[in-house]
Image (cartoon, rainbow, N blue to C red; front, top):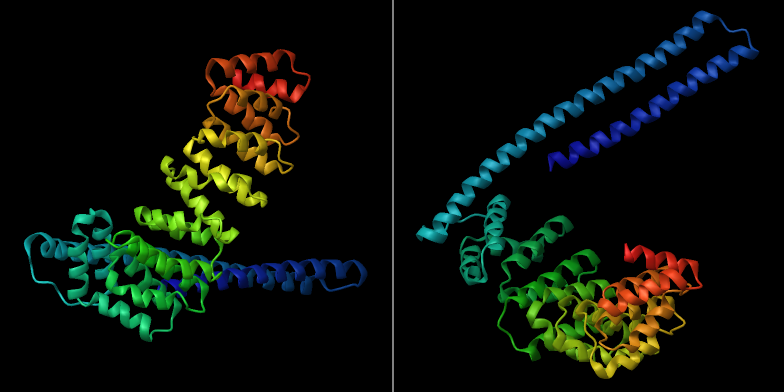
Length: 387
C-alpha cells in the first residue's frame, strides 16, 4: 500500500516540478521581454531570475532525494517480502511432502506462496492443494472478501486466487460475481469459472447449461468470450460444437470459431464449413481463419474456398488465401496466381507465401510470375519469395 502511495506522491511532485520549471521559464522570459520596452532596474531583474531558478533547483533536489529514498526503501521491502515468501514456501512444502500440520493463516504472502506452488505442479496434486487452501483458512478469507469487501482491488485478488485453486465448490459464488456491475470483476469471475471447470470432471451438458446463458447475455465482448472458451481447455469441445450451430448468434459463432482455430483440432474442421458461406463477411473470415490455424480444409469445402477467394471483401480474400495451404488440389494454384496481383497488398503477399509452400509446382509458378507477369508488384513479391 505504501509503495502505491509513494509512487503517486512522486508523480504528483514530478507534475509540480514541471509546473515550477514552466513558471520559472515564464518569469525569466517575461522579465527579459519587459525590459525591452520598459526601463526596469537590472538588479530587480537579476533577483527575480535568481529566485525562480533557486526555487526550482531546491524543489528538484528534494524530488531527486525522495526518489532515491523510495528506491532503497522499495529494494529493502522486496528483499523482506522474498524472505517471508521463502519461509512460507518451506512451510507449505513440509505440509505437502511431510504431512506437517496445516498452519492457520489469512496472510496474502502465504496465499501467494501456496498458489505459486499449485500453478507449477501437475493436476495430480490439485485436490491436495485445494484441501490445504481450505484447511488453512485462506479459502474462507477469499470468500469473505467476495461477500463483504467492496474494494475492487481486494475482490480482484480473491477472484485470481479462486481461478488458480480451481475448486468446483466455489462455482456458485463465481457465477454470482459474474453479474457484478463492475465489468473488470465480472470478467475475472468468468475466467475463474472457466479455469475451474477446465480442471473438473463434469458432463458436457453441465458445461453447456452453465456457459450458454452467460455467453447469450451479451455482457461480454467477443474477445472475452473467446478467451473464456480457450480457458475451458478440453471441456470446451461440446460447448464449441453447440455454439457453432446455424441457430447461434453471429457474435457467439465468431467467438467459437476463433476458439476452434486456437485448439486447431482437425476433427472440428467440419464445424467451420457451414460458416464459409455466411452472408456476414466477418463470420466467413473467422471460419476461414480457424481452418488456417489447422492448415486443413475438408475436400468437400474446396469450392467454398474458391468462392471466398473472389469475395469483394479484402480481409475475406486474405483469409481464403491463407486457408489455401490446406487445399490439396492443383486448381487452387490458379486462384493463387490471380491473387498475387490482388489490389490488397496483404492478399498479394500471402498468395506468394502460400505458393512458396506448395512444393515444386508452387516454386515453378513463382518463377513464371517473377519473369513474365504483367504486374510489376506481383513480379517483385515472387522474386522476394524465390530469394
